[in-house]
Length: 337
Ligand SMILES: Nc1ncnc2c1ncn2[C@@H]1O[C@H](COP(=O)(O)OP(=O)(O)O)[C@@H](O)[C@H]1O
Ligand SMILES: [Mg+2]
Image (cartoon, rainbow, N blue to C red; front, side, top):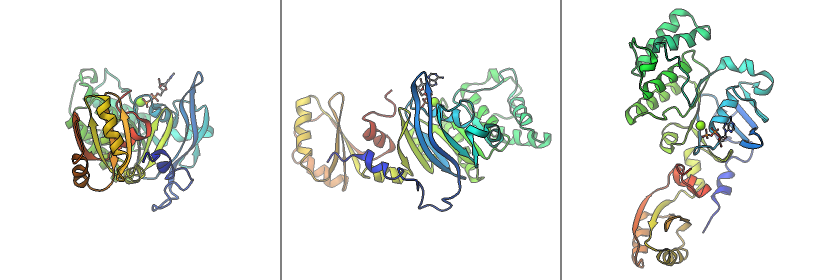
């Protein structure tokens, strides 16, 4: 009962052999050690350490204000860390940031595009800045814009919808085929169809061997794309691993959401639940809600509780998700800010 998930999940990353079971474990392209950023004494990023393997997709998942963008801005040389360092492709961010710049591509959270230029001109301009061959630049620009469904448009980017601008910025971030691509909330503001398109595109990029670091507050996105996930909150990494490792660390159970009409009802049920062996954790939320994680099958558990349950408002069974892991670690949902 009331197992501390934080400690259990913590074991999967607190030692230095973060991914010691995986192949190519020595091929870390990014090694972050104690990275910290303070703004007037406020620690937006509070000493994070993690390693990213070459060719993998690593997600920073966390609610607004967790410190994801600040982390990305440090890794992409925009912000100077207050403490710590990152070794990127064997180069120290602190000592040699200019050598890192050519290796990376960045799609920032807020679009950076030239509103007066067409999509093609925006992308080709970035290609030119990276010293790309003219013909290669043109061909790649056309092909990538095609994939993002924004090819062949003659109008200036200022006439584009928010979703089109986002997809344009994505293409701009990778025209030069960077070894490492940073995507800060790549699908924020996209409609579901465009989001799928972007996800498929990111999956294809991964197949080319590109290392991708993305941030998201969307657990479905993290789930769909990531090899490894670091869950961030208040500037710290509170859990890290593969999706399966994270779920295992959180007891790999099922979830029952309960809501009650009154606190008396809630307490009565809670007391009974505490007597059940299968119940691994009970979390009380606002508005007379309980979230229960339990092991064993849903059917058996349901039969058991329905045999003594008096009154409740709603009851809903589901599988454990990243959202639940976050909830268990912090007592808040990913979307409650
Ligand atoms: N330039 C800045 N000056 C002061 N505070 C900042 C600055 N940038 C970010 N912050 C603060 O740092 C925290 C983390 O922000 P951010 O990295 O943008 O989080 P996320 O990307 O996870 O939403 C927030 O509380 C934010 O207000
Ligand atoms: Mg952000």
